[in-house]
Image 1: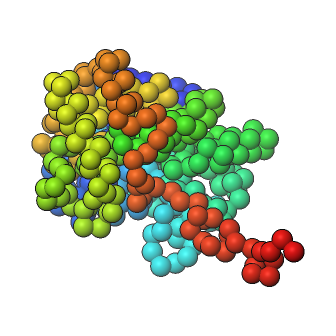
Image 2 (image 1 turned 90 degrees about the horizontal axis):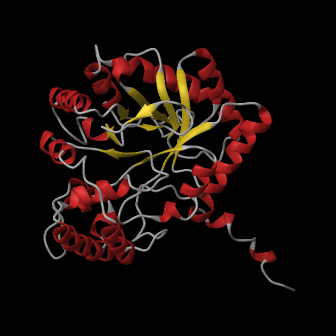
Length: 340
């Protein structure tokens, strides 16, 4: 395994990171013992970065148990800010919630520190200085080693870097955006901005939430678990594009999964791509492709299918700014809309 430096933290991580969402028993693998065996196999293969979140149901607890005796081998990452119940204060990036949430995560993970603590989604209702101040205190206390974001727009990344510099606060060292053969939008602004500020990039969804596994074909039944509640995995334009990538993978003599993963870690701004296997066979398939290198010819063909900096459709899980969700934020009162 060739290790890469996580931004400017000095922490060395594997190009493949192990995502733990599918270890949650009700949405992923129902057998915690099987999940633990997958974690151990990934570690034995050289993967040293595990990414989870407090909102991933019992994922943190399963990861914590599986790491008993092996915690020091792992760069352990988790997240905060998504809703954790009906209480309106049990979510977001306020100091009040961050200080409480990190203690809960540490207890579930059975550790005294998190190597990377990430804001799961931007929180427009909280001043970024408030968030960075709370996270800085966690770093000073030793409970957190580095901090990052997930799904943050480029403009917000820049603002956070400026605030940290001007206020003498800890800087966000990483960003975790979606990135795959189907979704390359971050190449336009997010990746260049992160590179400019020396941030590590941990990309999620390199297999297109299952569309790039080879198991989903246009005109055939979609048996993905998420197909029943996630719209983008049934999008016709995305399915047509997948067919083109299946043909390209066959011409290159590669499984589609290997093509997709090799592409995700080829960009110089990407540190690691997060894989989220649900079964041991899924993990075995991904590990079999860790030595795949894509030629310039194959990368040029990929650019022809999905041009750099563009997305084929929109991911349901992608962050959507409030102004795009709430009409009142982009419409003047009726009495003020006319020019005269």
